[in-house]
Length: 228
Ligand code: SF4
Ligand code: SF4
Picture 1 (cartoon, rainbow, N blue to C red):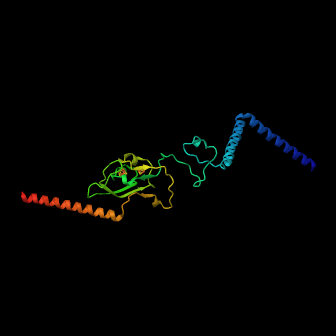
Picture 2: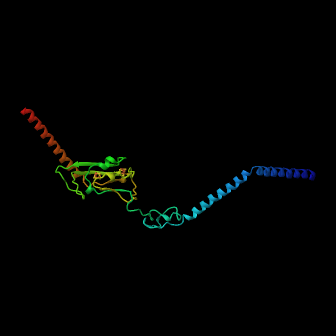
Picture 3: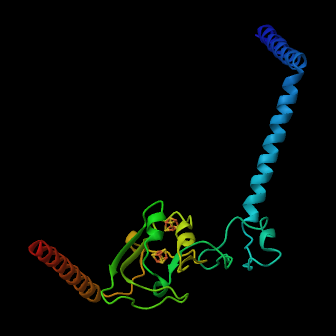
């Protein structure tokens, strides 16, 4: 038994030696392999180091500073995020976020609605039957009522074109970026200050005036034909 065991042991030792030398030969014959192994470990180590760094750095809180502060853009290494909404980043006064309309200064010219690339401005104008209904703060005459002035901010792409074409500069982009709502329809902002009853009354007056003008025109044409 011991003789057989000795033969098996020697065979195993020889086999292990063979495998080891084959391995060493293959490693020595291919110097690129060592470099590849070293590179693999180095890359993995760098990746893990970065992961560990970000794992703990996220515990730091970003200080809320105004955009004018010299350190505003220097806080990038301290944190991954902020505790919103308890903590909010300040926005510059000239921020271009939510739209606002000073409806008293609107002459209802419809230019903003026409230029809007996504058709998110919906205006209904009613011509005044009594001529001028007032002036805007820059002295422009108002001849139309804004029965409807809706902006669907869910569709708005914040291009700002509407603010550029407005002749009275009454539609502006504000630095208000957070108008969180629960219903999508609540992102439709209504700026008209006309009540439905008042708008209906003005619509009726205009229709009546137009009908009277049309009747007078027809009567004049008939009189002309009768005279001829
Ligand atoms: S900012 Fe652009 S997309 Fe938004 S309402 Fe004005 S024109 Fe339309
Ligand atoms: S362009 Fe200005 S004035 Fe004309 S409808 Fe739009 S907001 Fe009113």
